[in-house]
Length: 64
Image (cartoon, rainbow, N blue to C red; front, top):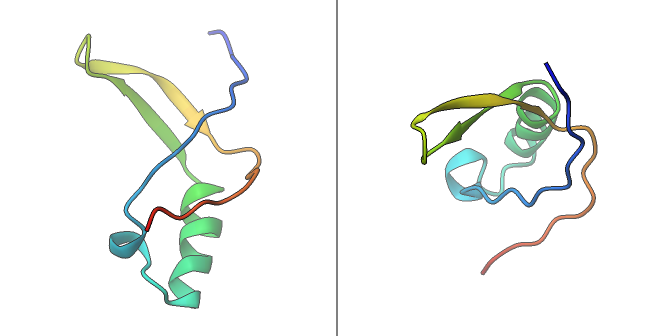
């Protein structure tokens, strides 16, 4: 196995995941983003190509 360190931009539906509820926001960041490994799926080959773990959050930006 090989590990690549990447900087990525991750866009998700914040209304569906946690809306404006502070407790749900804390849950999403601590129990999901910084706890889980994410499967990286390629639509080109239709299969998982690896796992991704969040190491650091650089900034947040809302699309409104």
